Amino acid sequence: MVNVKEIGKVINILKKESKKYNVPSATHIGTTTKDPFKVLISCLISLRTKDEITNKVSKRLFEKASNVKEMLKLSEKEIAKLIYPCAFYNIKAKRIKEICKTLIKNYNGKVPDDVNELLKIKGIGRKTMGIVMCYGFGKTVSIPVDSHVHEVSNRLGWVKTKNPEKTEIELMRIIPRKYWQDFNDLFVTWGQNICVPVSPYCSKCAIYDYCKRVNVKYSR
Ligand code: SF4
Image 1 (spheres, protein in one colour):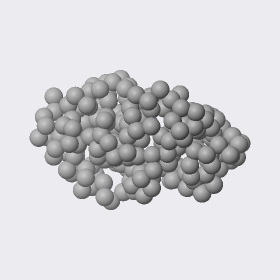
Image 2 (image 1 turned 135 degrees about the vertical axis):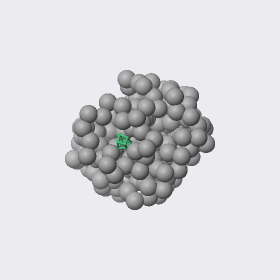
Image 3 (image 1 turned 30 degrees about the vertical axis):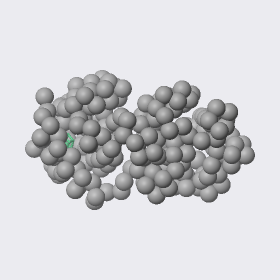
Image 4 (image 1 turned 90 degrees about the vertical axis):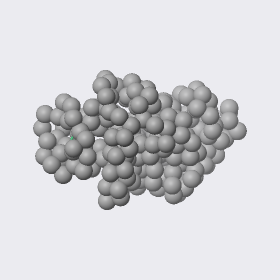
């Protein structure tokens, strides 16, 4: 079991090292706009989509519609066209419209600043909720876990879990709260650039000495 001192060391190394790379799209949009609606929409767009595409199409979409009311004026087809070529652009366009309708109907057109209310909205799961709370509202209520956070945490040997939901629960148990705000950001950056899927760059990894490399069959 990893100890708190080691967690702190790894986080500090990642904080220093991750400055060499682009920040993940949710952090970028959160820090540049401080707008929970934009963080929410770009988080939906980012699913299974590279950050360069997410950033590009989110910008294009927000130039046409930067709030709930403006978004509802666009047709599903127009939204799909604006967010193309992100993955599942038609399904995501439909979901964006549905979420905007719910925001108007139940939340006065605003993204609710509340964990339970966010999770009541169809299409918002725990990861999206965590990202919106963390990077949209600046509140640390959870550790948002995507495939990168899940994989890096398991490879390090910090958790031994089968899916992101279980990883989130385990991480929230072992990671001191003071690291929650930056955790997703740092681990996503590491997962996108060094601890990449399939064949990670272990030979140039700054946290190699702290890593158990669990289930790493190939590396570069
Ligand atoms: S040593 Fe390899 S497996 Fe471990 S964190 Fe670094 S890149 Fe990932």
